[in-house]
Amino acid sequence: MKDQRNTLGKTERLKRRKAIEQLFKKGKHFSVFPLRVSYAFIPYIETSLQAGFTASSRHFGKSTDRNRIKRLMREAYRLQKQQLQDATVQGNVKLAIFFIYVGKELPDYNVVSEKIGVVLQRLSGIVNEANPQNT
RNA sequence: ACUACAAACCGGGUUAUCGCUAUGCCGCAAGGCAGAGAGGAAAGUCCGGACAGCACAGAGCAAUGCACCGGUUAAGCGCCGGGUCUGCAGUUAGCUGUACAUGCAGCUCCUGCGGAACAGACAGUGCCACAGAAAAUAACUGCCUUACACAGGUUUCCUGUGCAAGGUCAAGGUGAAAACGUGGGGUAAGAGCCCACGGCGUUGCAGGGUAACCUGCAGCGGGGGUAAACCUUGCAUGCUGAAAUGCCAUGUAUACCAAUCCAUGAAGUGGCUCGCUUCGUUCACGCAAGUGAAGAUUGGGUGGGUAGGCAGCUAGAGCUGGUCAGUAAUGAUCAGUCCAGAUAAAUGAUAACCAUGCGCUCCGCGCAUACAGGAUCCGGCUUACAGGUUUGUAGUUGAA
RNA sequence: CGGGUGGUGGCGCAGCCCGGUAGCGCACUUGUAUGGGGUGCAAGGGGUCGCUGGUUCGAAUCCAGUCCACCCGA
Image (cartoon, rainbow, N blue to C red; front, side, top):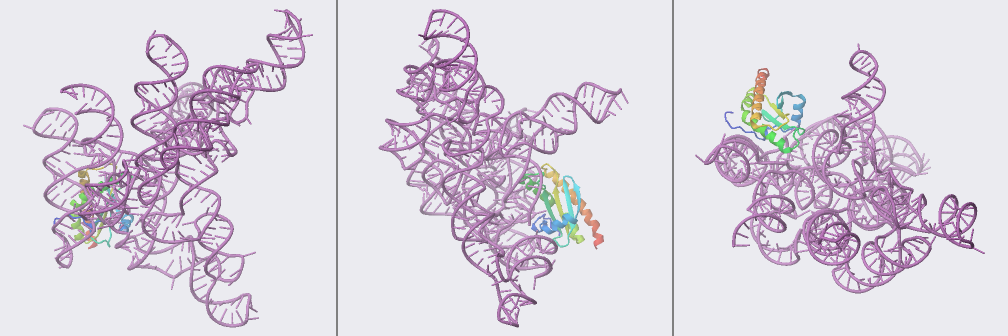
């Protein structure tokens, strides 16, 4: 895993309905405003790290706004996920993450990128803590 | 040239780096390359279809929708053209009233820009607040006639007052609305009671028009409004929607409960009724009635499982351009062309330059670039929209 | 994707079917009783009936369009 390409293909996104339901039911949550993050270690997903993104239709009635928020979050995640991915591969765990945008106004890309960075730092810490227990 | 209104159209571009989706090709694979990748409204889900499944001899009732005429279309409550009524504005012409310092008011005709859920109010029922006598087959004040009583006078008559019986809707005032308008005749007083002109409705004839309807002549009629009140008339309509539907895979408990299986029974005809149609198992014993066993069917509930994939899913009432027909909507024909198919759901991020608009401290800098994102697909309607282009109409200014 | 409900003073609701006066409770203001408050009594203010049109003499109510909020269905 030495290549520097920052891809986010179909297999790296959280798509299965069952996995998502389990994530919300049993996973752990924390907030970095304006983001709320759910995560769980789910063994049967295909790749070592899968992520999903959403925004509430209660705060954003127009689908064009929801699409924009999801695209911004996905772009920020794509450019910063490398460290977390390395950690999951080394720890041999399979992590599913879900990002929910809970703010009420359309954000700038810079804000989203900064907050996603904070979230990924915390998740890397969590993965490294879980690592020695598993192995 | 500018401003206002209306209609139609457009609604940012190029390059670089990183990235997303499906397709084709290459590759054992990782992956690489190629050319594609949201809209005029994709929206609201308000109409109409296509397509799919289920149902279907038929009749009546109910329910729902629609309502001037013709055309157009796959279809429509859409669109185009026309008719009628109506709102606003304009000016000229005519008539009437008033004024006569030639204007003002009303009506008719004409022109321009709009609007109309535009069948029926002599089929029936209801409603019309307040005010007013009265809100629907009207008599309060009033006007008039007759009879009676009283008073006065110029005494077999007239006048006045009161009361009773009738006639009447001119005048009064109320109201959104009061029983055709104006003028004349007529009368006890009055009234379309009669006449003239005008207006409305309706019938017949003639002419024009495919028709709605229009024009003319003749006859008849005059007790309102409301059907976006119930309703009546005419026409139309089976129901359900891609979570439709067909298949594969995974997985669970061919599970449990109920009903029916020879009759006054059940099911269907998707609201109801009539009517009609269909079904009503097999084996054993028994002459039969019946008994026993097996199984089947039905649909509802409880419980359990899966929520993954493929098809439907994009070549179509398609798009672009020309020609012809038609006032137009639209159609015919020829040529070219392939233009999103995602599914926790793809078109993004960053940078630079350009374009347009605005502002300023004007070789430049700053800010802004709308409404908004496919979810089976089309035809419309409605709503949102920075800015720009074109055409038409009206006004203002300038030039010739 | 499909279906449904609602919008009326500051808040929660009635009135709408069958058109003519917008009302109820709490809250608010003033007066009064009390030394003061609560409470009681009396009086009062406050509503473009979501918005835009239409029907009607007249619309919160009927009709059409539109905006917003909420709910349901795998």
